[in-house]
Amino acid sequence: MKKIMGLLLTTLLVMSLFVGCGSKEKDAEPTGGNDSNQSSSEKDQGNNGDNSADKPKVGVTIYKFDDNFMTYTRNAMTSAAEGNAELVMNDSQNNQSVQNDQVDVMINKGVKALVINLVDPGAAPTIADKAKAADIPLIFVNKEYPEGTDKIDYDKVWYVGTQSKESGDIQGKLVAEAWKAHPEWDRNGDGVMQYVMLMGEPGHPDAEARTKYSVEYIKNEGIKVEELEKQTGMWDATKGKELMTTWLGKEGDKIEMVLCNNDGMALGVVEALKADGYFSDGKYMPVVGVDAIPEALDLIQQDIMLGTVLNDPLNQGRVSIEMAINSAAGKDVLDGLDFSLDETKAVRIPYQPITKDNLDLAKKAYGME
Ligand code: GAL
Ligand code: CA
Figure 1 (cartoon, rainbow, N blue to C red):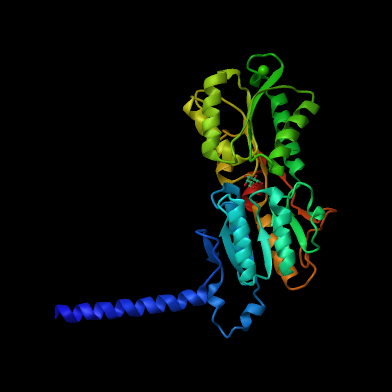
Figure 2: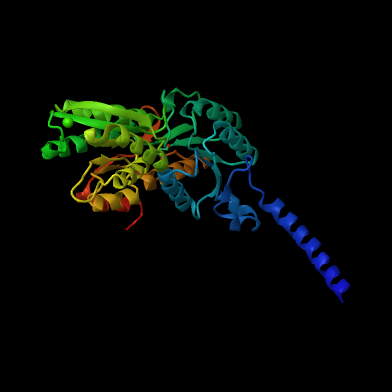
């Protein structure tokens, strides 16, 4: 009996192995090493085959999956592709050479268009050369080639993102108005705003512009400022918390304002402030970010964060996928879209100031209502 059962089990095991192999071959998706890959409409594979003509395979890379804001953008891409395209989604793990390999693999697999969220903004021409050699349209999203997409030597390349400077201006305006309305925030009464600045990735056009133009706007409003601390927190909540904890230890209550290049870092800052007794018993610190992610909206609702700047993930995700589908079909890249290209071949999705008065606007942009 034992022997028979053993034989039966072995046979089953061998059979399941064969089945496994077969389906693996059929569903094989490009992999760039140990990256994550997912296909949004595998159910169409293996039909009578002619469905794939209507649903082009679009290759996507995200600079890293583990990024608050890009996760919302990525989900918007997946929704936009539903029924319209088959997405091959890659996590580039914050490594440009991993991303380059992923692009090679996707091209070899026959994707009809590429949607690339770069790791290193300077790598845009390298990726464009690959797309050009294969004659595949290329849409960069969220991280812009600093010299301008129009400077890349390829006719089928475009960019979808924002006008980075706008987010700095809006954040600066929000801070300047609130500072003027709250003379008590100038704790040492010296008529100067002592602030700390948490920056995103160095070299990222959004990070550079937000750092520069927020402060420039505040100064142009006639407010005197003093920068106590400025460092990169790499868009990351944990790093934001670490930096703020260190600065609180060093500067103590000299700090009167916290400017963050994004909400992710602001969330970390708020944790550090809470651990230091802020946001209870009337102890307050104004903190601003950018993105308007749901966690930040919550903090604004609770009068903890002062405000943020909406960076619209639904539109950035949706427009990038629709442009990919259009260009893959040889149509005008903006066919059916309510957006236009600027002189640098970029679609600019507008930013919006967000405070407690207009949280609904941001909730909509994040698909929360
Ligand atoms: C910015 C966003 C950041 C981060 C970054 C990634 O636009 O504000 O939170 O997601 O993109 O490139
Ligand atoms: Ca002061």
